Length: 252
Image (cartoon, rainbow, N blue to C red):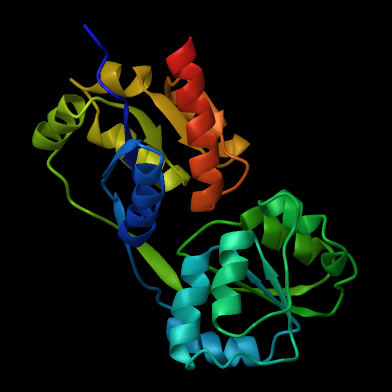
């Protein structure tokens, strides 16, 4: 009997998942969208315009931070600061808002940001980190040690979507989902919680694609043993890595 085509589970926020689903459909790859979080405005969003106006360097750690912040002051970002994005997707979001000079590290994580020449001599400079409700503590810690004046601005929050696992997980299994795309530690934690108990063996036997070695290590410690790390967090990078992973699995 011929094996049913593999189906990929996409756990990013809805718009991003749908975009990736469309990219995969062009390649004949089945995908199911199931966001685990929704993006909502953060508690500090009303303060972002004042914080950005007085900053020397602005670092955005996700495109959601740029989307939310830009909506507050009608996308009129000041010209004076140096703009730094954690990766190409965040850079592209800024460019959509007419911020064209955006620095991006070769490595799309806190360590990569800290290696940038623009963040070496920062003593006395005011650095604002646009983020969600938590994260990037290493970045702030290291910049503070370099004597920068560092402030966080919580531009958005990830709010958990309530899901019925007793119905949802069997549906995924019926759709032959055996590859999971998880792009944050929060998504990984929520997915594990959703499958706790009866569905754990299915979860940990599935292939997992993620976007950083840190998340891959968390997944390995949790029990996953088929883990791949994408070259980036953009949907284009995820698609390219997924195609490699699925083609390799098909031929093995």
